[in-house]
Every structure is written in C-alpha cells, then in structure tokens.
Amino acid sequence: REGAMYNGIGLSSVRGSGTSGYVQRNLSHVPARRTDKPWRSSEPRGPAQARRPSAELLRHSRMRQVEVKVAELRDRLEQEGSCPAEEVDARVERERARLLEMLERDSAGDEARDAAALA
Image (cartoon, rainbow, N blue to C red; front, side, top):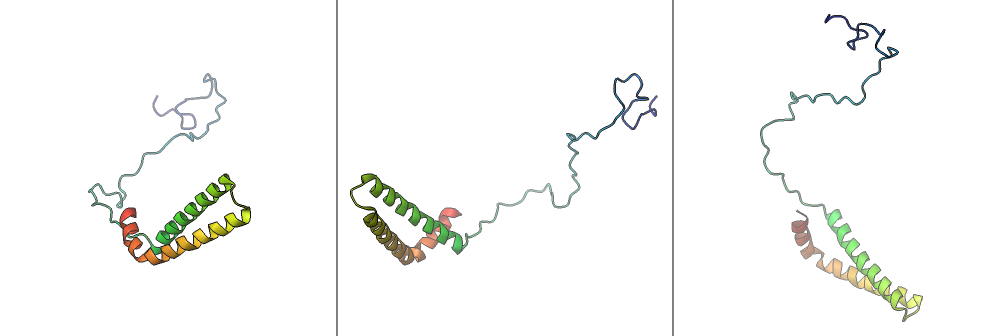
C-alpha cells in the first residue's frame, strides 16, 4: 500500500516496528541548493579587479616592520648583556626614531612599491 503511512515516515503502524513511534526531525539532512538564484549566474566572470590598498593599511604595515626591527634590536642587546637596561632603552628609542624618520622620508616612494607588492 502506497498511501499507508504512520506520521509521514513510511510505516503503516508503530506496531511491530521496534520503535516507540516518536518521530524526530533529521538534523543531518542537507537540503538541495536552489539553482534559480539570479546572482548565481553560470556565465563566467572576468578576472577580479585589483584594488589599491588603503594608505592606512600601508602605513600600518610599515610601522609594524619598524617595530619588528626595534624588537629584534632589543632582544639582541638584552641577550648580549653588555649594557644596562637604561642604555638598552635609550638605544632602542634612538633606533626607533631613526627608523621612523626614514619611514617618513621614504613614504612617497614606498607607497607605489607597497601597492604593487600587495596587489
């Protein structure tokens, strides 16, 4: 009998099925995707448009490189142990100031290079 179903699951009755008859939803079921969505076109798209990275992002990247170099200098000076902590701090601050000055001076030329590297 095709039409005979118990609670829509294909059993004609709970009797003899070895179950209590309690029906749960199948949470593992993945429904088929709809294919009639207009934004899912089957026609191929062109290559992705390359966008220029923002100036803020480029500046942050360069500032991060400066801080990495400063941290490496601090680690090297502390491992050597040849100078006191105050002198390490002073040398690190001098190096940071020097690198930031170079960064500001070279920022115009670096923007074009960084944009090409990130694109």
